Length: 527
Image 1: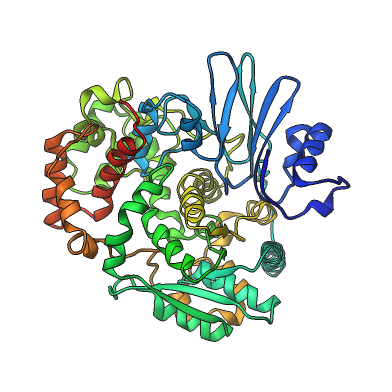
Image 2 (image 1 turned 30 degrees about the horizontal axis):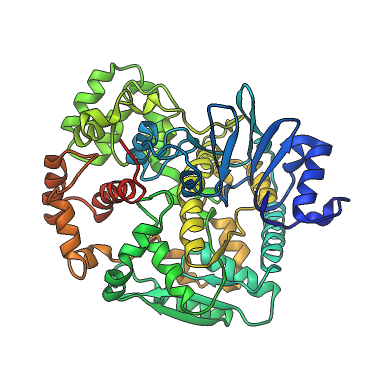
């Protein structure tokens, strides 16, 4: 089985269809043969009684498996495929804890007991004695002393090559928010292509998160055929049930992308470029300041008793202090704490006692595996970002929402040669106190308006608070009243509803709980 695209097949003297190509590649080189493949793909092979499942280096497509009692494997690109094949519909406690911790389920878990996700850049080899996971791709992380001009030339070359390869398939358009990632893609595309470039931005009625004015600046400068997709409150009401029902694995963040791809579907587009990986590879997010603080304080807090951290968690006046409390007694990589949405104590306070079973804290979970980690702190954080939030939220959401709406997502920044290059660069050299993601900005050249470089980072967001208080208020209120709950305590959901109406928590906190309750009901997953 092969799904996806390979961009550099001409680098190999192997003939045949894509399926025949990966079969011959595996027979000749084993899983290591996939390390240099550039593309977006998953594949499955049968070899000497083993089932070999392989996922591309950035996890652009999901791949799940379940091993039956007789040792045979069921696999597919969606969890629902496996459920339809007769996999028991039992909720995974570890998957639930991961979801509540991060707003998505981190690899290797899913929300179904016994169903696992193949990690990005890995092969899961299923044999009669169990499952062996092999990492076939890992950058070397050996930093070198780069000359700045030489480095910028190398980055430009890899970005342009990746963009050329990914736009050679079909006739893509581009999402354009006016942020650095999407703007740089459009600017680079214009540098190498003088034909029509179609760009799209979502327009809505909340100026605080509306990015259309920035997108227009980029579109005008790069002479694109620009279209503003108008999102109205009535559309949220009309499409919300369909959006929620379409999720293969729920996420706290993917709702905005679902509506963006649905609006794009109405235009007839089939393929779109997006800027995933830009923040993580080029040092966005304020240069990972929250994560750096976690690494700074972890040596002092990790030796404190866990009871002390739990007490601080309960008394913490803000999320900042709650994150510090989570570091107390935490023995694993400090990276995982700043990404938390709910702490161990908050999860225990919200979930019915019989639901979580023996999963009571993050350290009970198996965290995503990497063969090695960079010594350079900024590169270390960047790599862990690529292995977690990029794979398990941005890529998964992009795939499942895009696929449902008939849109194929292209992510030219997520390229293995570009990543291997960037991980040879000291993290500090990729940072500039004056501008965010300086190497990406310089690569864009004159196609990047100065106003878009210095603008505050907004992120891709829609005014769901406005819609939840308007066109779909009845449905939101019905959930927040605590009716028909299976996973959460009624008093905790009612209390959360009160805080939400008072403006003390964001809409996505409420949405986190709504999605998992709804997903379990729709998919008939038993507790």
